[in-house]
Image 1 (cartoon, helix red, strand yellow):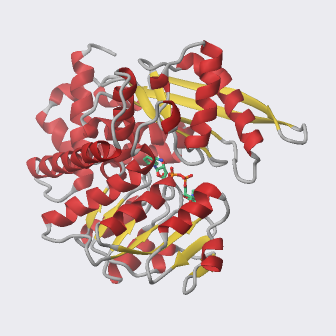
Image 2 (cartoon, rainbow, N blue to C red):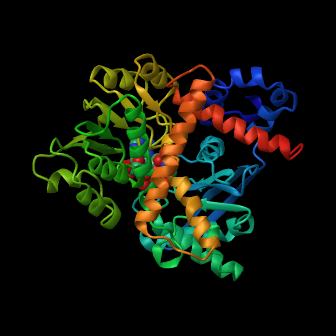
Image 3 (tube, rainbow, N blue to C red):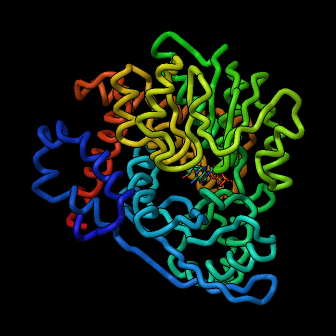
Length: 433
Ligand code: NDP
């Protein structure tokens, strides 16, 4: 703790993983003997850099850029870039740490990393965003490569930003290295379904958890927090699977629409016009926007927290349980506090942690890397069927591992143990790395 002082989110994520793996260490003393845990907690490399840029009025701004290359035992570092004013080392490290285990649970050959900046894209013009991305990549490019480190998007970084980053990488390196970034536009090496993958995957994961209990999303009322990339496609797939999403949110409040959220309207507002979610209620009869309150006060049978870390605490979890919630799929990374997780597990709610439930995004990024490496491009339906299979496999691995270790139905333990064992074995096999 002393060594990583003040990195509270990182401590939380480390605690959450190592709390689960006691039974593994009992069976495998070699992990402790070879200090695998200590090695896993120390990123292989951490890069922090200055990002100077000029706004439209000629004023100079200095942001801080980060890339934490956490673990490459299974493949090149892989994980998104986040642009949000809250970004600092503790957030990047928690996200990178989670990513190592998540990527392992997908079964695909990808290591774990994460990055970003404390740059706030809100209210910035497209030209300002482009200048920022170009400056960010001017430093970051020397650390990347399709066999080294392959970033993608995350909060505040979507297809537009990936395009600006890719253009600058290509310009500086004079290499058309498609596989150096994922989440690219379909016009230059992007994969079908990558945009939809995290949200779709989360809905598939919930469907799998419900199927184990002889249930499904059909006819269920669902609440999804956030209204960004993950939330939008979690809503779309939930509707396709027969559920009704009655509320979604942003950082100012939430929209309640008992007739079911009109996902095309949310896409228009957030992806095309880039305006606030409050506009939704202005344009949709019967819907209301509730400012300054938590979306978790809307009763539902299924909840998919898809905005940010620690957005669902113990009180919110208790409120959801009282309202009849039976399943949670974490679309975001670590959105539920440890107290919230405890409340859900004690109430017997099927709880799908982000490491498993939102792994569809990075898994489809790995499919994008496969297509780039073979200079191929797959169709939408084929790629979506791969995503669905991958999510079924992720679910099966977590479910089976939890049973093997005497904790049936505990997907937190299942994901942590499976991911840990996979990475630990690879590290041991590669010597003292
Ligand atoms: P976006 O930037 O597209 O959307 C984020 C959404 O969350 C927005 O609606 C935003 O509202 C809301 N939000 C962000 N910060 C806060 C906050 N502090 N309080 C309340 N609401 C907030 O990001 P993504 O959808 O890509 O990512 C969402 C989550 O999913 C993150 O935890 C991310 O790490 C995780 N994730 C994303 C993946 C991906 O493929 N994109 C893959 C796996 C996980 P507002 O506009 O008001 O800020």
